[in-house]
Image (cartoon, rainbow, N blue to C red; front, side):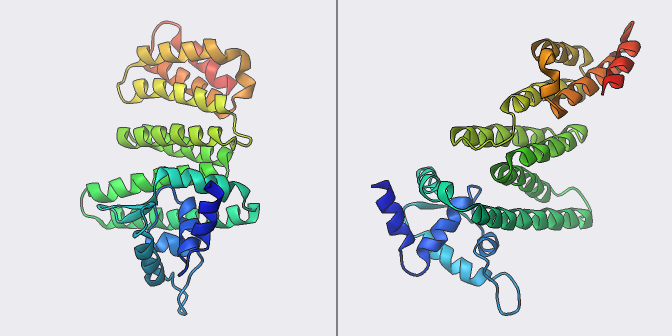
Length: 275
């Protein structure tokens, strides 16, 4: 029954099936421009053909399997349809198609982040709407990178999470952590973690708990308690954890220097020497 439904969707007239197939990749929702990039539709002038994809989306939203977020005007499939199309289409498509689609999506987000940087730079004061849009673009980039290349996606998460913590951006930190765990869970269910070590992800999440205590709460003592527990739990396997272990040692040293108790400075120097 599932397969028959998928075949019927793909054979729908007026390119509706092709539109739904493209939407299957876009769990964070589709805009006309993003859909045009995924479907590689351009105008004769070489611009993305958002007029045509707007029409495609207007046709798609008439289906019960499609929904729209009113405040964003993004088009989504229902969760059951994402799962169905993932099983019968995305999991059996070629690596060439996967690469093409995800590279198109990631170029869209790269351009969007760049444009938001420029708008924020030109804004005379703090603009909450622009900053929120940039946070959202960062988070969605992490999602799609994880889906395409899990190990690289995790590296992207670490980079953005470091920016959030060092910039004391608690909202971005929370959004990134939530998206990481959600997407990793999705990939784990589908056995698509590739060469990403899920235990390294688990350790990194734990380390960042200590980093939040240190940077957001200025609590060096509490941070060290967290770091020490992590070192006790995973210390025997340090070589298997790569970047997460390096972060642990760096922030343990930083917490010791911030606490500045007796013997903390030599211990901190020793930890820094290890990394």
